[in-house]
Amino acid sequence: MVKHVILWTLKDEYSLEEKEQIKAGIKSGLEGLKGQIPGLIDITVNTKPLASSNCDLMLDSSFENEEALKGYAVHPKHVDVANTKVRPYTASRVCMDYEV
Image (cartoon, rainbow, N blue to C red; front, side):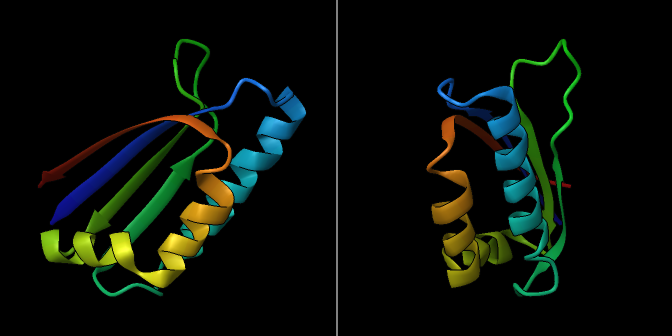
């Protein structure tokens, strides 16, 4: 199994209320991919970091193998969510993929 973890920071230009709406959109968009992409086992977006955190939200996802992760990256449903709900609003992205 392969884990795919991403940490994002939202752009500073948004108010706290706007950030909450953006985070909710990212969460529903990405979690809505479960069962729609081959090899995607589980996908969760955490939008409630503790005050000690230095990011705004986290994606924690699991795939059958590295090939499934590669397929997810280019799958049209994932690309649509990334291009409409994630990329326009994020200032930074850190990713770690690893085998379990």
